[in-house]
Length: 312
Image (tube, rainbow, N blue to C red; front, side):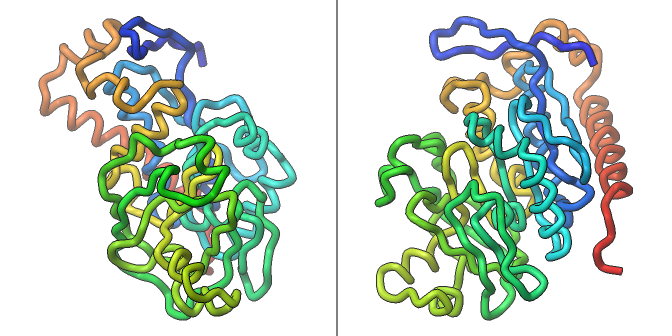
């Protein structure tokens, strides 16, 4: 596909151009149980509304993972799916190289666990990718329901690594999502929570903390934590999709990829590239919404057809 030119306003107000923004959708056929593929669609749409030409690059099980894309999203899945994903991504190495280069990555639920040091699946502990300082055992009771948290900044954390890169400093809105998991995730010192739980169960419950012999302040810290931030990775248990319910979180990822602050991103729809603006102006608002709905419906239907069934 020919590269397209896009532009975004820099902090100084100048224009910065580059080739088309590419969003890697990691293993939608394996890790895509709860509609998490929609996160890539949200990123693409928020880029396009800012005049940035963007495309989604689906990467299926068995495909090499290019480490040259601008942003990656990873979704949730069942135990078997997690094991397959971990084996493939570790053997391929592409997403590990991308993370080491500082490319922003959003990992949801099973994605969080796979990116950690190890996780429990199908009755045994499985090696993760080691990109997050996190280990996952099991909750006492499955967490199903609404989850709400307040974002935490690096300066609010005690970990030294978190202070070196306040990736989420532009995140101020409360975070919401729908949780459905049995994982009890414990964060190590190199990772910090994305948020502090206000409602629901986050990374871990009391049972999960007791399993690894935590008590006192350590137990309180782990049971109040939601998600993880380390390097250029943001991980969370929020489905929804997470970025549809938390658009500011999408902008944090986009800003990281573009090398600007969240506040320096152009307003949605107010900085459309002239080559795109002409096409939009030829449509009335109702037609634009209908066309977008059809496009998204077709893409979601295609992703569902490609999804591997692990339940039968």
